[in-house]
Length: 489
Ligand code: BG6
Image (tube, rainbow, N blue to C red; front, side, top):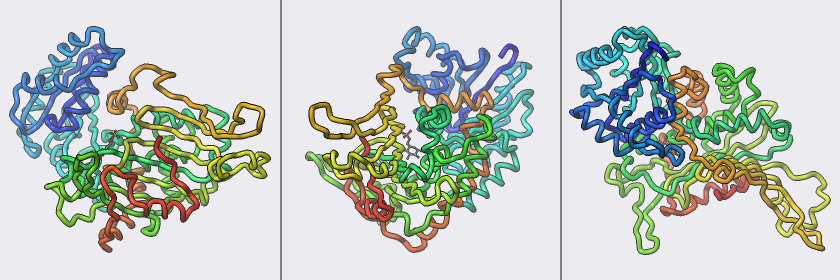
């Protein structure tokens, strides 16, 4: 703080992500007093806009949380006064040089730090970092760049992107976002494991039968079909969001909470995994469905999607970790769009109680009586542990009940958006929640062979109606490993 100044440049300022997530998160940080005293925000994009037009555009997206209502409107005005705009091409050195001059005026000889958020398609990342000469920038403090997936389509293209970026940037400058790592419950995963005696001793093949990572959205690719069709659900959700959760879930205890220690443990667990086999993945695609008099379009009805697209909008996969802790335990992932509900959960199913004295006293079949730990990432964040309990009364009947930590009752304040935490960390130089390049490589190595085979063999996705629970194939896959999917609550 003091005599230093921070400029945050959002490249791609008129795009959806910038409007929906980045500017609102920056404002929330400003409201909380988390930004340095002296800061400015620059929007950069091709559209011609004045500073006021940018402010107008942003102002419609800013909101105050329930606990941030005081002086909210004044704060918004003050924040907007710090927002500026510069229009330019993404591949023009001159345009970026002009931006640089404007940044320098604001920095006025102070110790200056710069954060660039590249909220643009990855095929122009390299143009931008080259034209903006971000490595050699004449800044007296640090220059950091936030980039967001997709980082390529497979191991080769991702490796190529990394090599190109590294011509212009050092690894320390690159902050690769996976916004799931900024979600409260995902961050809490390590706290749950490593600060409670009751979980860690059970965290292995000795007690855990299977682990399920489930992502479900109740809407289709509306408006994003063009992007989505090039990637599909495995690249959009599994290879990053779900795999990152898996790595945090399964890693060994890190030496410390230091970013490098944590990321090294995550890489280790990813490298201990076997690449996904085609026989362990099933794919689906949603089709048109009418419900309650309303017609919901199928994936290929989207005008930006080719009529005969085979791109999966649903996938289920079984993966395994080849190490002493997890040998033989299926890690099942399921991700889909246009399903019956929206939610993301981690479900841990424990083994049966050996020689259970009470097996006769259960009303349900024994398979449904095993303990289960559920971490609900969203919505309605919570953690609950399913235990067996005696139903009160004179008889001896057991049922399954929950020890339930519901965030909205226990912590009745709004949870900050993931982008707030991640932006703050990038400003503070905290890399724990960002993806290191070796992590990214390891993640692609796990999915690339199956992705290629799916495409080469033109595997036809199983169709499922919009708003349904997805293809039945997911159940066959799970039953191959004696697993029954938990239902999103
Ligand atoms: C993005 C995907 O990374 O995550 C989208 O590209 C998906 O397809 C989104 O909708 C889900 O994020 P959240 O935070 O709304 O669960």
